[in-house]
Length: 121
Length: 107
Image 1 (tube, each protein chain N blue to C red):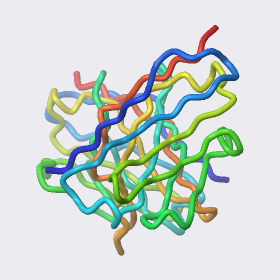
Image 2: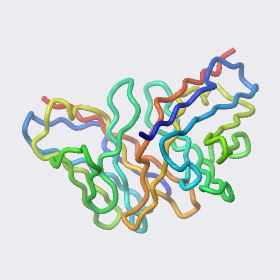
Image 3: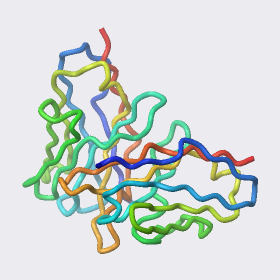
């Protein structure tokens, strides 16, 4: 069955870096666009970034552009989020999600359970 | 505008019908998808496109859209439907955006 498992979260000081991973299994990873979505404590969902199935396109939310980099390894079936210059406001649970793109629109059909990133001094 | 606006909270009596709306200019071009999130859990998608339900989602959930507004309707709300609901859509830049979220309380 499809599984997405995030890892790499933790406590980090403002200005430092952190890399999140999302290990995918149960499907042909290289066929699907993949996303990162985050949720600050007590807040709503915020879309963060997407990477095309073949990694030739990436898009970012304005709030993370220039600081975060999404990447993927289609041989290792793993999605990454490299986060630099972290801010207190980046504190959130980070989810990875698989996108389905169809004639009926796009949607995220599978999500991981999330990994918590806390940015604090 | 690239925002998607939802009412912060709605309540519905057990067994009654509730409609949640999502407004934004991008919905004139792209379909919305809808997600249910319960406390401490990852989101689960419940509706995509005009009105498509994934397997396992009860048929009391339905979707519709008109102009710049997408709607999620729960017909015959159950206690287990109490949750936060978010819409999502693409925007023309290639980015995606989530709605502000609606908390549904079943009375």
